[in-house]
Length: 326
Image (cartoon, rainbow, N blue to C red; front, side):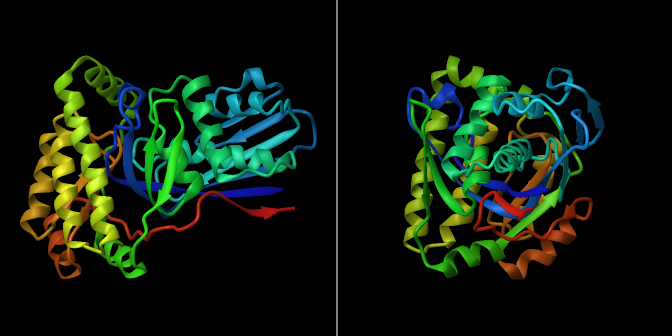
């Protein structure tokens, strides 16, 4: 039996610049962190030659071609595993449409566990690149490249997306207390709204590709990413909320539907209660609302957002790991 544990992620600034519609013309950049919420993938040799997959539903099939779960099917085909295997998965949070990169975390964790099943060591780079190949090239998902690398590498990083599809992952170099203060300032709320990111990302890609104004907006977000990196390297955490707020205003202007009247109302209430900045994580329109605020303002913000569920979260320094191998 083999078990992998792979973290989800929170993206702070630059989201969307990891889409090929942008980075094929100009390098993109994102700052994000892995968090202590995980997806677990368990692999076990099956008694017979069949395949069993357990996620939100159960599949029992006799061949890979019969598998409905397209990511599982693609990874098994990519690794030439034909049968005699059981795959189960569980997650700490809702695993779809929440903006925490859950699909990519699952793909990274599945690839990691199945490579281990075959006796193959997986580097963080190979997991990031391999899961991008599975999701983007094989399954044709209209997504970017940040989630896979955030899950594979873990930590608090700046990621740069090059026109040749390569990704450069660089840890933010600052005092440990700086990252700890940001972690302690972070609030995460579950809105209860789940949505498919595909439609929003497809529209965002189309808008960026067809509009010079949208490309300029995206470039401003990339500039904010570099600005935030510089401020963090100077251990200036006071700039964090302000830059996050500016990034959110720019992101909302990219594509209709990223925010809603309800989300805008929650955000306004949080700012009035003392938040310095924030955003809806992921593609937008629902999922998790992330806010930055001084710790003494946290209770006031929670009272202002009584309809939302607060989630305790810490940053995770490690990426995907094999936590059991027998």
